[in-house]
Image (tube, rainbow, N blue to C red; front, side, top):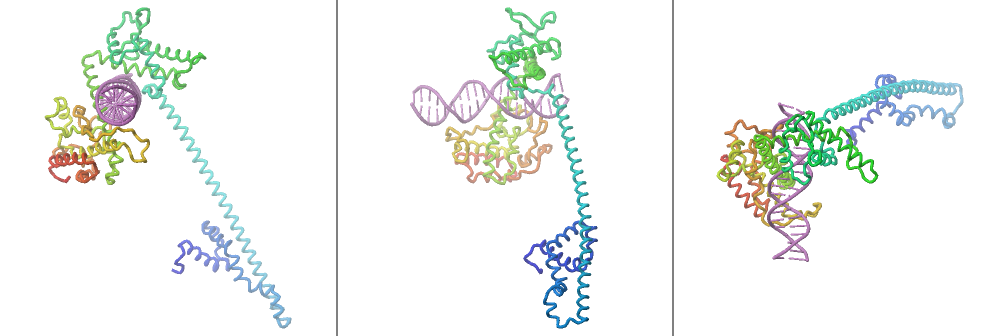
Length: 499
DNA sequence: TTCAGGGTGTGTAGATAGAT
DNA sequence: ATCTATCTACACACCCTGAA
């Protein structure tokens, strides 16, 4: 109120100065108290003292006496040097001296206070330093413990985990020597290699590990046996020895150079890689050899192909999400919605257009055509954005580097996963972390008849996204297509909350 | 019309993580 | 150690585009 233009802190300083002036400096009250019981108060106090007190207080408190004592005017102005006046003068001098003595004493007390405070600060500082030292030692110990744990983890997992991708130079070397020792033609493709190995599944007589054909030793591991079987162990050891010997020769011969990195050039690493590869090949050979196994293998391969296709489409859709966000800024979390397991146009396929196999898979999947149209619409919009981006050829100047894209005037509609690539289980199943759809992804009517379907709340923007999209976010072609889809959606969504 | 260059869709081997 | 599902990297065939 009195200092409207000053921040509160400034006002505080002023009030404190006033207090110091009246109570502490003139009368010496409370100094010891403040200094000894409250460090913060003491500090503030001493700051006020050093900065302001000498000018303000000494001029007001002592100058009248000092002036009288030292100014020549004091004597010149005195009319008579009689006894009374001398006594008065002496009295004044004595008073002044007494005041000075008092003040010096007070200053002494004050200095003692400051020294005490200083000692306490030093003690506090020492305590803090000790604390920091203890903390640092603790952190160092934790770091050491962590590194030990990490070492142990590496050692235990190193022997069992597949480390092939950590040794990219070593991998082809191991594979080549592996097949060399088996006598497999280098020119053969993967399928023919498997065929070759399947033809040689019969164990050799007398537990032999090697047969000699045209003067060449050919190894015959027992693929159906455990990796620790003595013949398999011998074969793996042979591969490791050959890889090691080759590399050693390379390194010792001045005319040649090392083929692998120093990390690869390690018996344990080579052995682990070889074992891992042996298991891989053994599993394939035994599957090929056995009728049921072969069927299983084929099924697995088909699943992989389907999955790869779905993943490819999901990845392409991910690329379109940033542009989608530009067009629909409130569509928070759109990226999360694009899940490999969710999106496929087969959800909207008419049953009579599907093959028998696809019908079977859809049945097992239990996701009827009308159930997920709202979500499918979202995916189609991503597809269209993606097509649009490609058609535009990234012509906007800030895109780097300019992609040389062929111009396509009529984007094809067939962007989605084909019906033949559909999975045979519902989207949430079969994953370590199941994919759970958001409630707004599915149509309310479908959800009502599938009460067991687990859904999450959120992504409210999906609702009605459609009708907004029709209003000119896309090219003429795309808009026409979306109109088509919107009409279809309206049919499938009886609640009509999308329009 | 031909053809090189490159985009697109698809298939495959193998890696990886987690469960058993 | 083994099995399973998921994922990555790469290869290849097809076909469109644009220049010669």
